[in-house]
Length: 196
Picture 1 (cartoon, one colour):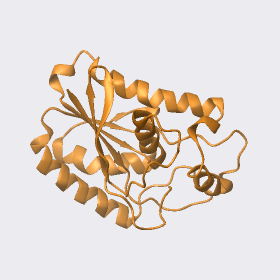
Picture 2: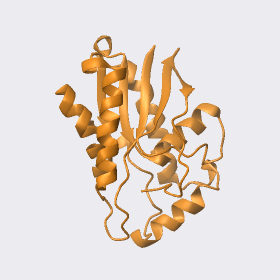
Picture 3: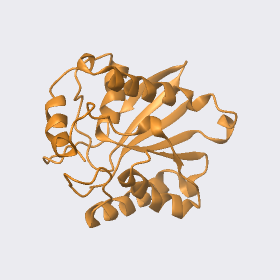
Picture 4: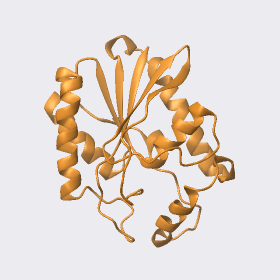
């Protein structure tokens, strides 16, 4: 069995003009606290692989634990945030995402459907690598919509918003018998900060 933790990034700066904002000061503290928690769960990171979306907020969330364990973080495009519809201005993305939360996965554009398939395909390949004996767990630093997409796929549920993962929450999955299984949902947010 291979374990996967889908970790939502820390709080990011809100911006209608920056497509790749970094963490706020609170987000940086959240990432440090996360590193403490992960070090308790996986002392010295033995048997753990670190993967991150290439977005700055996800990478900055991974950096504290990577530094502590002296490990590299593999950037993986397959766990990047959901792409906006073609031609949509960045300033309209937040409103589009909020509307998407109440819709269904089968209403996606072909590009977004390809994005979604790429996530689950990538996660399932984590046990087929040549170094699988070295790793029992993969930590994936990613985004709200990535996590919801995977949970919906496992549940075979077309509703987009399956739950509302908080910043730095950890959703646990397992790969057994060539399938993804949901072990435990991450901590949910109790605020309106659902995206970014």
